[in-house]
Image 1: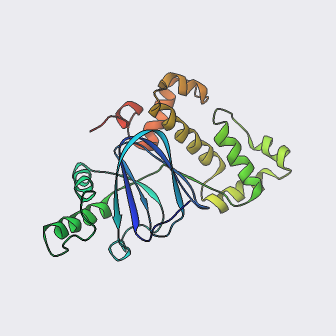
Image 2: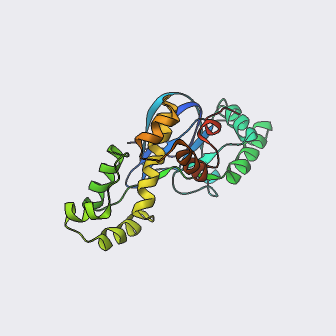
Image 3: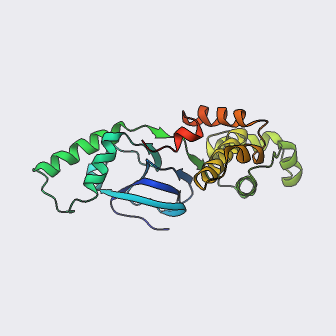
Length: 227
């Protein structure tokens, strides 16, 4: 992992990447979305599917009103064009000139961008890491609380409480999020929605599409369509 003195906005024009930050989790970044990586946050980027991307680096004093943690963001048509323009700027651009005014518009638009719920938080305890690592490796499995109770020697109530304490979401929400992120990766790689729905244990393709739309606001086909 590495970090930067300046914040990094990584915008994907094509492909899919996984961003991970030390002790906080992973984010899946689909095409036409961006991930914000604040200053001095230890992170790494893993390419899931061949990508084209643009980067904009933002000085700490200019990023004061941006989130202090990583997050995936929706990118409007205006913000997309601003990112493309700024990615070509010389770092020593004239702040009082046209480039500086364009940067001000960019920061305003970035501040207005909506976060996308594509984060999979990392727990801290060894017991929960066993659970989450297993769920990531086997998203198609329907592991019950009773299964983990027997495997780890912890009560279901203890496991449920630890999930909320360590990840801020419930066990079932974490498992659902793991399935969603797995599905995003497979769709980006060209797998069919029908195959994904079956493999992830959904009763029908329409049930999977309904879950996807509820989580991300669009059907899989529309979500990956380039505007």
